Image 1 (tube, rainbow, N blue to C red):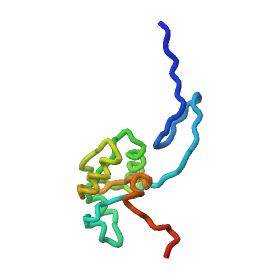
Image 2 (image 1 turned 90 degrees about the vertical axis):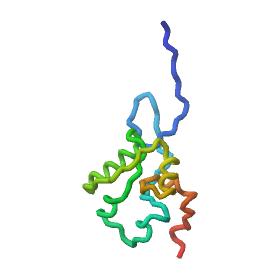
Image 3 (image 1 turned 45 degrees about the vertical axis):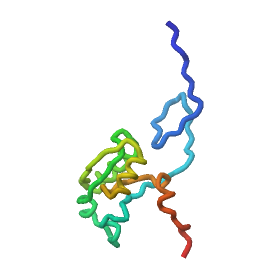
Length: 125
């Protein structure tokens, strides 16, 4: 039986590329991950948020096989934190909606929340 040849012309990966010698990969952009909370969260009014406050907060995470989950997990382990994970959701939009509903806090790529942030240029007074 002949196997069909599969061909990939173009793909976008939202994380580290593990490498394959048959695929050429180029970095298109870099992003940063922000810790986000609803405007109604008591954390928002704090000038400084300590690790104890973060550890006590309800945390909403992205699916466990995502690069975002691994990245946040590495940071949490490095800081020796224990997050109170209350839910794991399958899409960044679902995570955003849960945070907006004040169900907890989360780490989300800046590119996914640019519209919500409406950030002024950093160099403005």
